[in-house]
Length: 324
Image (cartoon, rainbow, N blue to C red; front, side, top):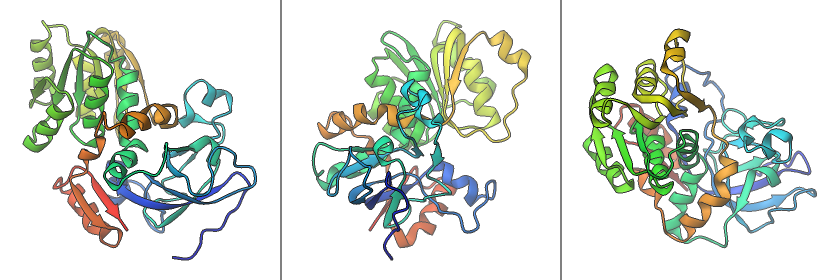
């Protein structure tokens, strides 16, 4: 691969150590979003090779993890903790692309976070997970206020849903209900902290959640799919006054205002401000207190990325790690 051109003094160029395929990458794969000549990939971790003259927070040789949204981390929105809405926001997917050997990262100081040192190979999958699925699942749990003593329900057993289970556990939730029909994902959900598994979907899934919660619904619900059924299931499973965190990319979802009105719940979500959480997530990974890297269940070389897309599209893989 040819070298990456440095465009601005605030840029950095990194050589990726590993990258991966996200569930949201399947939208262009399936034709929902444009795919022709699109720079694919938005999860990344690797070593800084070049920095612009204005970059101060990372240096050549640092191992870094970055968010899937470029942010300056200094604007008013960033300072409030919502870096995914930065005044200089740029999505890595479609513009930069990180399913590649190298990537140019704009606003490097506001987007990249250096690890305490050079990681051992076994830590790299977990650090890579922090750049999106862990940070997104964590945001879903935070938005749902998955606090100590609460019951949390997670709708979706993909990588983000599983990371929301991990986050709910780390945030102190007392009971964590994972909604899943897949035995291997159920097993991983229990590893990350799920106390209950619900296989029912739709209205039946809502009824089961209420059955488990004295007819009330969960205090906190994370929606991590983005379909009409999963969204309505998540709203229905949230008790009045409860909190719903939605982080599934929700194409073609329609919510009747009257349904949301009478639900009487708090709702927060959208693209996760991963940069807010990165400094806090890297340390427990570094200390081996959490192992989000287990969410990768298929590893392929980058040149076999097409096979990885097919495996995820056919649900033969939860998340695919791409190596060099």
